[in-house]
Image 1 (cartoon, rainbow, N blue to C red):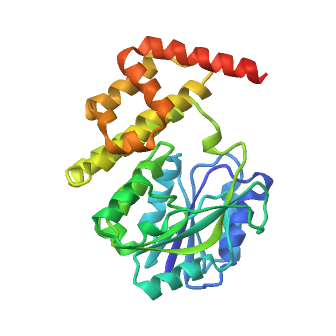
Image 2 (cartoon, rainbow, N blue to C red):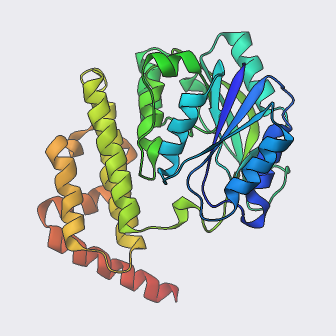
Length: 339
């Protein structure tokens, strides 16, 4: 088997989203592939839709039904255990790909000897194969033979995992998997996995269509989701320690943890939650300081974190209460002017 494509599915039956994704997979120009669709205990008729595809394409579609909801990471892990392909790819069940997507990525792998291959993607808000806003998923200076310098760049900005294929032997030999039971599992897996691959190449075309809609995970901010992002980074930090990466890549791991556990979570929580809790804001600061007490001296933090964010974080590091009420007042005034 040349390729296994893993599709985690949860409540995707509405508006033809799941069918559009599955149609793009069973219509691929390569034939030596399997589509492993993992239903994550959906409450709608997603599982019935998937089983209909399995009946129509028994040589290509394999359906796994999880009896309990494991979130996307758990569903992907079930798919990984079943994957027989030399290569493994992932796709979100509300996205889709061009008919020659996997053919082009596999061809690039054969031409170059790469063990991971990606491409660019297109942002769209309707079911179409017309190119929307093109996003560069990774940069040219991250590609080629992966030495320490390029691994550092991939740690900082790994790019999306669904817009890549991975050599399965590397995954299996190194026990690579996803955190289960939380959102933002790729925030942990993406940078960690990148350290195990030795040659990364890109097809410079937008072959993947990322569907933007209001029910997407990224559009809803709750304390639970913020805690999931924090937990993903805690697992990332723990895994880097266990696997011996902390010493070599400490600056990059420190910044990655600071950015996602603390900075992004802090400001998205303050802006997106109706009644933010001071105790939670204090917990964020303490969480990063426990692991990296001098995070504000990190060169990446000084370079990549905005000046205003650094000023506000400096305030919080001195006075949690002053930061909390100052920022809430700022938001109130901004929204009042906007209305």
